[in-house]
Length: 309
Image (cartoon, rainbow, N blue to C red; front, side, top):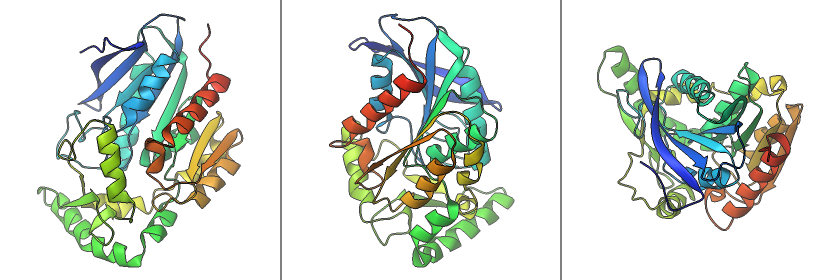
């Protein structure tokens, strides 16, 4: 499948991750202004799919001369794997490593220049990978999850207690080989959803509309067992080991991935850069902030992973 109406082409391709076929959109500049260009590997956040807002970023990067590989994790979106919507942190990191290795082999790509781009939960993933040996040229972490403890504290005790029975039940189901017990990934404030802040549900309505999608186009759920491991997942611990340049984009009013720990991560990264926006967690994906957010990313890329003309 090819996009023929823009300054880039888009093809749907597949790569293997631990025997599971994962789907990725590969964006390429239509005019070959350079050979052996950097490749940007991208993935969505907690329980998300690649089609939700991320093509807008990928299109801008491809129009600027980069090759982009935007993928769905196993169990999510168009990628294979069962049970569906199983968010396994170790498996997602394995998918990232497989995606990076595959992206290095794409035609026209400089295999020595790979940029990791992640948002929300995936923002934490790219920081974890950069701090544990993945050879990125640069990373962009947009509203990243960097502290499980901080995320749990932001969720609040009442919400944690509301979700705990489902998490325990799902763990028991997994031990017995039964179908998962699911919880909503996003919902209205006060609902039994993982992200149930006042701004979450209306913000997703705007994100879905901006993506030309319906909320029925993808399941807004995750297997509840992940809630038992999210609190322990803190990419912040790897920040000092991140040697490549890193752009950390923070929303000052973020109730999902609190700004404080993200600032700490940026301070600890030797070549870290932080940009803050007076916004909530979901506001960076859509207007009126999107244009500024992506312009800041392109400026960072031009300085740290330039396309050689």
